[in-house]
Length: 460
Image 1 (cartoon, one colour):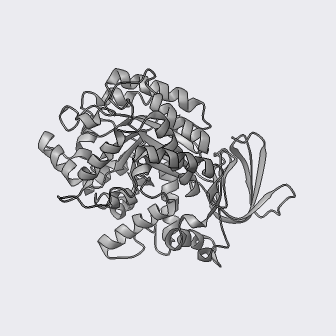
Image 2 (spheres, helix red, strand yellow; image 1 turned 60 degrees about the horizontal axis):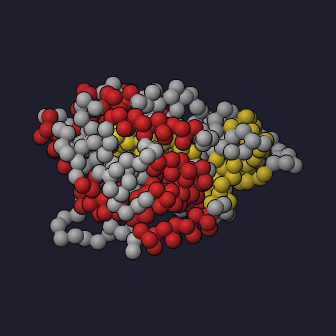
Image 3 (cartoon, rainbow, N blue to C red; image 1 turned 120 degrees about the vertical axis):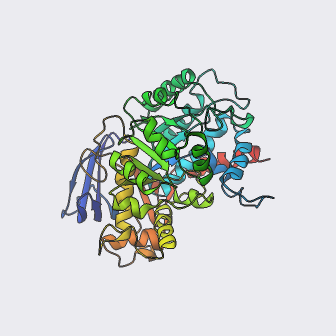
């Protein structure tokens, strides 16, 4: 974290009230102190063309970055999330704490290069290779925090409670033993995670009951209580099979059942919620909960398409996540979110907020606000975006990139999202520290060198 004063000057920047010209952003200690528009650059200002806020990545399983591209071969039966999961489990059986830290560091560095400045790490890899608890219950969570410290990304750590293989408390399988814990041990994992996150600038800890498949109704209240007012994230209604099995178990759909079991409010993030009915969308929106959408992973796994247009019409909150990290690109997640709506509705500019409104700006604003809320600390009223008292988390875009030539204001976001992608990212500041220049993380070479050695061991 930068302790000294920092002043950046932009020809144009996106502020909470809209685009402004000739903008100086000043701060100290990782926090924005002032934002001034229509000012000339001073001698000490670092000058750039275009400034936008960094985006939150509200849902990640960082270790899965190492298997991206390795599951794209058809099996003897119809492939689905469930067949992909078996391949992921085989990888999980191999990875040790050192290797987890190396893979996570690569994922976090690539997130920063892609325009994400905070990540919600939905962390469920708790035990050793044989399923035996480590002496430190938070050994693996500590490795995630160490990767965040190395790369500079802001971390919302979400230790995940996973105790069962299916609805009704069924016994976990042998390949799930690295995830499985009980309420007492999970409380120790959360406490250890809090200690690790406390050493990070802006570190936040919440909790994540994995899903209603993995947590019984009796266990859920104790798990949620450990959030202590912080964020609560849960996978829900991601696949059709999940919905069918939940109905067979209790006569209710997963989202319907969740609202019966828990007091869902604005501290909750319902990850995926792909197969939500209109009535369930209304309940999520009314509660102020955030829908955690991961368009590239949902497409990769063949999950289905979230009814985002209907949810937007209800003023529902949503953010984006990279989930399995098959590809890390904030713009690509937003693009696929919109394109999936276009394909299913056979229409264009579906998620634009209103007539004449930029689709890119609408997507960006929603993801910034929803993601910030979903990853916030207990009771936080932290502003989202480039405003005083907000974290000094900022991204500059390369105005010389062909996709941005002669683009102005919201045309910049439209062109970044729909005509370019991560190649447009120039510099990234997190808590006032520049961690990306020229589109490359400052520690990329060392991180990739370690990653290459690790993958040779893991995948041999």
